[in-house]
Length: 269
Image 1 (cartoon, rainbow, N blue to C red):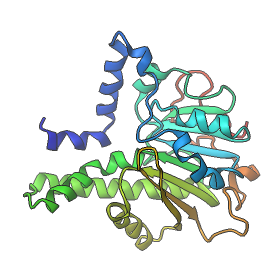
Image 2: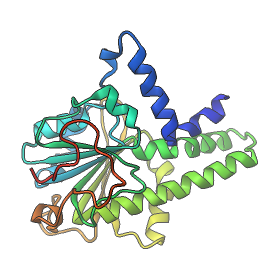
Image 3: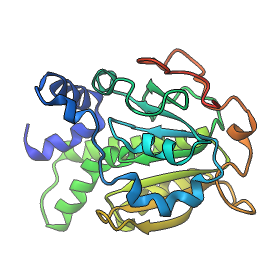
């Protein structure tokens, strides 16, 4: 598989299963149990604090084996976090070390097809999940800028990626409570992401971009969306929803598989 083909694998579970499986058999895999893509929580803490301060329930999509959710949970003791990732091998690697027992839960689930009730979460955290779906699309944008030819197969994969992003944004919106926040950390700046925001709006999305910034540790981009109109006083959970006890975070069906201890519990804590 060439470099131009490999990048499309980032949006496939098989790629991540293979990656994590290799970590399991390596002698030094203990050091690989945790890996934070893009940046640490501390790099964005002051930027995302206004959007987490009032939240009670959060969803971490494409959680991977990052330390991010554990750091968020430690910083916000009132917050219960549910992480989802579509690689079952991940949980063999990370075990139950992804966050504090009792306030974090982890499920094998595709972020584009989630089994949570509507309006279940005050906050959705996305550090690299959207980017994994966009990686091939972003590569083609660079290649086009260099005047390179794009193959019909690449154009077809690009269309698949665009559709996957649309599904992801739709699911995020559905799972957010009114007034809830979608916090995206991405390597890509506004010119490379505005197309997806615009597509979502044209499709009737109620997600509205309310803040953007650049973190100073690794110069990644932060985008914050709210579901619906901005609530008076701001902050996640202003619209009730999960924080008000509307069944936040419980999976509706058996599509979600709970690996390890503590998975699948009611995220209210």
